[in-house]
Length: 116
Image (cartoon, rainbow, N blue to C red; front, side):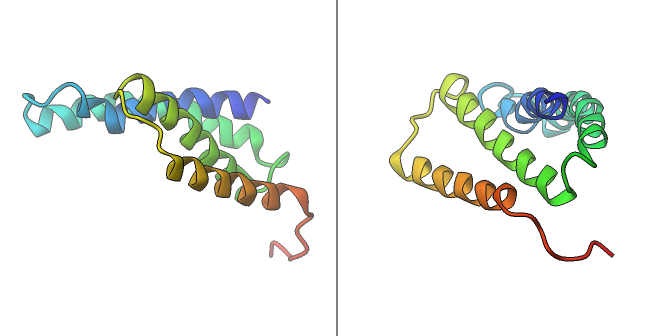
């Protein structure tokens, strides 16, 4: 559970680093946007790296990546609706549902292949 919580926290920072400037900062020069984004992303890395290190063993590398992608989408949906004031269209919901089905398949069945 610590892994998922840390991934949520890291994704909040990463989403603001990547997309926060879309609402604010249009008058800033690009170099300034990049520096501010990198500063925010540093916090994201300080949370994501421990999340993956703690989670590896409990989850496979593939599962960690799938968790990361689902968390990214959940965080971005909230960000787009609340911060960017965008509407969530039905086709986005369908796409998200397919990703949830993909996550189900990643976790519901035991992998049979060798990792070496």
